[in-house]
Length: 109
Image (tube, rainbow, N blue to C red; front, side, top):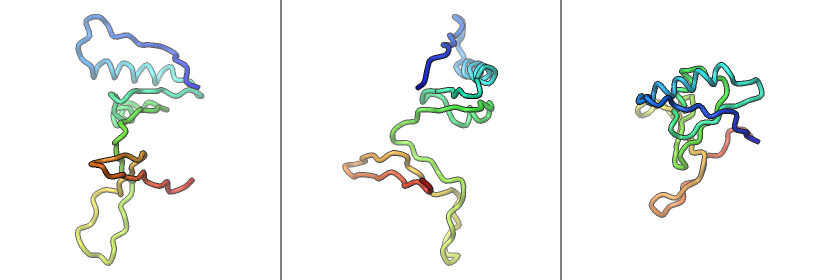
C-alpha cells in the first residue's frame, strides 16, 4: 500500500519546471529506502528518471501508450528492409475508431 512520505514544494520564485524535476530526482535518490518506491505522475518522463539514476520508481502513463521490445524481431528470408525498432507492446487494451485493439500478451507469466 503506497503511503505519502513527503510533498516537496516549489520555491515561491521558481519558474523552471525542469529544474524543479531535477531537484525532486535528487531528493528521491538521497532519501529512498531499500523497501520504498518513488511514484510519479504522467508529467515525468521515463528517460529523465533513468538519466537521473532514480533507483526504483513507478510512472503513471497514458492509457493509450505503446512501448517497444528492447530487441529487434527476426528477419524472415532476408527480404525487405531490416527493422530499426523492436515490436510494439501495448500494456492495455483500448478502443480506437470503434475498433478494439487488444493488449499485448506477456512473454512470460
